[in-house]
Image (cartoon, rainbow, N blue to C red; front, side):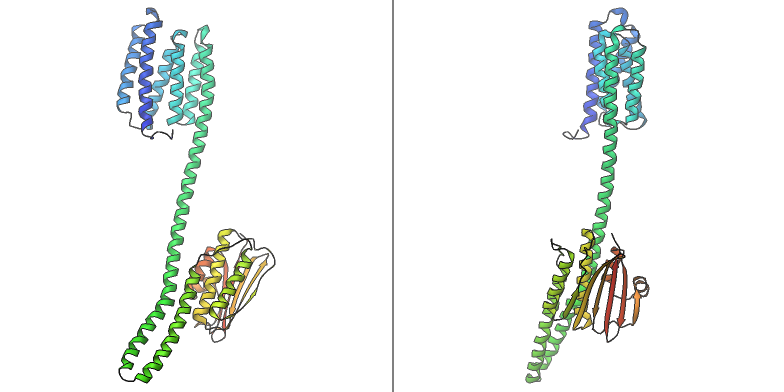
Length: 384
C-alpha cells in the first residue's frame, strides 16, 4: 500500500463496499426466485447499501476503536446473509468474503482476521446446500492466507517501531555527542588560541605606546613579539591538528597511534617514545576512534600546558583490557598526588575532555601529578 497515500485507502475500501453491495442486490434480483428473497432479506440488502454509501462519505476516517470493530462485524454478518441464500449468489459471497479479509488485514490485527475466518467457516459448514463446498474451501484457504499476512504485517510493524526507537535513540546520542564536542572545542579554543590572541593584542598595545617614547626599545619588543607570534602559529597548528577527524586504516590502531606520535614530535619538537603491544587491540570501531581522540587530546595538553621536553606513550593489551599510559617531564598540575576518575570528578580536577572520553569508554582513569616533575596519565579500557 505504498504506491498511494495512506489516507486514500479507507476511501477505496469504502467504495469497494458500495460496489459489492450494489452487485449483491442486482444479482439477487437476477438469479434468486422471489421466494428466496423475502422482504426482510431485501430490506437488509437495502439498509446495507445505505450504510455503505454513508460510510463512503465519511471514508477519510481511520478504521479504529469500537466503531471500526462494529464495521468489520457488520461486513462479516452481511457475508453470512449472502452465503445463506445458497449457491446462486455464492461467487458474490466469495468476493465479499475476500473483501472483508482484505479489509481486516489492512486495518486490523490477526485476531480479527482469524475470528472472521472461523465464524465464516463454521457457518458455511452448517449450511444445508450440497454446492457450498467450494465456498467453504474458499473461506478456509483465503482465511489461512490472510491470517499469515496479518501476522507478518504485525511482525513488520513491530520491527518498524523498534527501528524507529533505535533511530530516535541514535539521533539523541548523536545530538549529545555533537553538543559535547562543541563544548570541548569551545573550551580548548578559549584556553588555547583565544588566550594567545588576547596576549598578542595586549603586547601590540604596549608596543604602540613604547614606540612613541623609545624607538630602539620598541624594535626590541617588536622582535620579541614576532617570536611570540611564531609560537602562537605553532599552537594554532597543533590545535587545528587535534580537530582533524581520526582515521584508522588497514594498518590498525597501533600504527595509527604511532603516526600520531611521530606527527606530534615533528610539529612540537617534543621528543616522544612510543611502545606498543604486539597483540591485536580488539576494540570496535567506535571505541577505537574514541581512544585515538583521547590520546591526541592528552598529547595536545602536554604541548599546550605541561612545558615538557619528553613524553612517553605506551599501549599494552592484557586480560583486563587495553592499558594506555602517557608520561611527561613537564611542570605537572597545580596539585600533587594520584587521583582516580571518581576523585577527579568529585574534586573538579583534571582535564574535562579526557574525563568525558574515559566515561564514554567506561574506562578506569588514573592521573598522577608531580608538580615540577611531570604528569602520568593511565587509562584502562575494558574488553568490549
